[in-house]
Length: 197
Image (tube, rainbow, N blue to C red; front, side, top):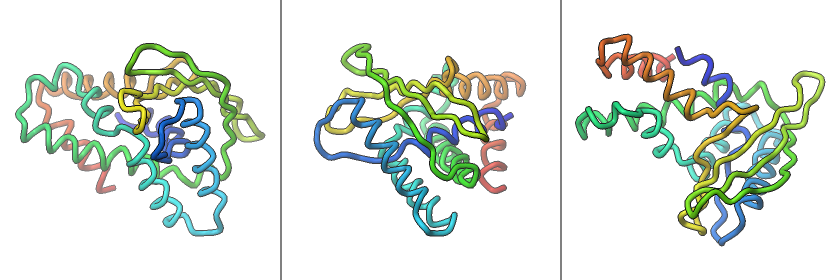
């Protein structure tokens, strides 16, 4: 149930980790993010060390809590505060493990940032291209950057070739919960199993 998202979300973590302390444009934020990620991936260190560095940077650059709450969709209104807290812990572990488990598939991803489009005071969309090579085709990636705090830009979603990763994850989680007659604990069980695997 999680495989589709895991395969795609790797790109988020590989390309999304840096926190700049001064105000900057969303376009420059993504340029800095992808540059920093590439530098880490090129380091002559083992996979576990790279994973640790990228995970720490991802925690600073990606709004994991916001994405997690979005993926719950309508079910967020029907769970207790304790359940929400547990879900946020499980989702964060899932999100970060998804990346680290696929890290070895990438060595030096090259991103060309093209432009940015202001959506509203909270969001700007940054368009880019993941340059293709002999192992993968060119991929169009749009980054939804949360800009409410200009000194703390965060990545809220990626749209890869028109597919929203956050929306895809929400649909998958909703399917699991509905398949369990609304029992959200089944989703929790699935997340726990993945996190322990």
